Amino acid sequence: MMNTDPIADYLTRVRNAIKANHRVVEIPASNLKKEITKVLFDKGYIANYKFVEEGPQGAIKVALKYHPVSKISAIRTLTRVSKPGLRKYASVENMPRVLNGLGIAILSTSKGVMTDKEARVQNVGGEVLCYVY
Image (cartoon, rainbow, N blue to C red):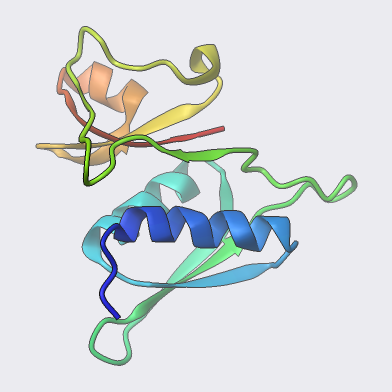
């Protein structure tokens, strides 16, 4: 099966797993998806992840994070910004602020995949992949 937008597929699988209160979601792997997963883990939006190297592509197993008492997910919203039909780029000057700094924008830059805050510090712009809060 050919997928036109693998990043949108990744975000949709995570959103659907959160809606269904799943603990773990399995996603077909790619280098960009692995980097996005690392950013989500570093910023505390997911509990853990594991890269499974089997088959031609491999998979990413993502353990979702929920509040222990209220069972609310750490990820409230995942929004795809740059789509294959309309790419969105941001320079350092017009870098997006998600929820006035409470959320993160994940960017694909020339120095790798990083958050909007890290891109401002490193003074690089890039393609805005998604917003997370």
